[in-house]
Amino acid sequence: MRVLVIEDNVRLAELTVSGLERRGFACDVAVCLSDADSALDGAVYDAIVLDLGLPDGDGVAWLTNRRQYRQMPPAIIQTARGALEDRVTGLDAGADDYVVKPVEIDELAARIRALLRRPGPRVQTVLEAGNLQFDTAARMARYGECPIDLSRREADLLELLLRRAGTVVRREAIEDALYNFNEPVTPNAVEAAVSRLRRKLDEAGANGALHTIRGVGYMLKDVAA
Image 1 (cartoon, rainbow, N blue to C red):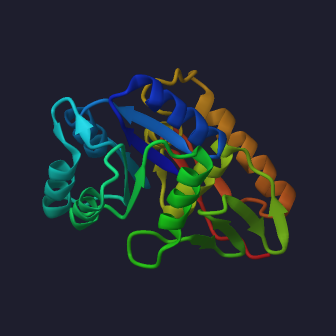
Image 2: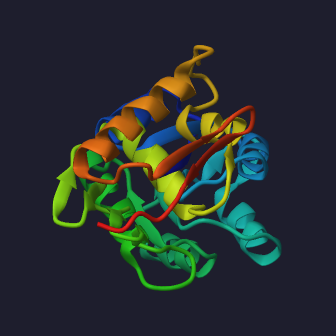
């Protein structure tokens, strides 16, 4: 799952990202609203964590505008504004949840997972292709009755491929989904991640599920158990 953290306090942003990444999330940081717009227009996120007092505007007004004119992922406001009026305003502006700083990282991660479990067209919790299943909230995969132990990167890759099962996912799209903007990516990083995932799928019995489309990308196909 990929999360955009919108926070101008550099130290807090670093702590939030570090904590979420240890709990299985891939994260990008935007230190202002214009950076957040650029990030949302250039990548797909499962959720955003939004501060309110930002250098180039107020997060509540920005969220209201984004919700009105553009499709948005679920949003959690994380702010020092703890008054009842502030919480009501934030939720009415389109936030899906509201937490007051300081918040424990385990609670924040749990709230993000809870958002992604909510029913509705925004999020499909369990992805399936034949007998291959992946629970996007619990980050657990299985083939038939066989659990598949995946690293965070492998889980993110499987989720991406399952969401587009039966279609080719370009190498560039995989790189964008697996690595944040500031993370160095080696030339063969995507190929190595695909190779590790393919090996684990084969070991679980899903032989031939992951296909390489040479020069283009990769595709996941249904394989019956």
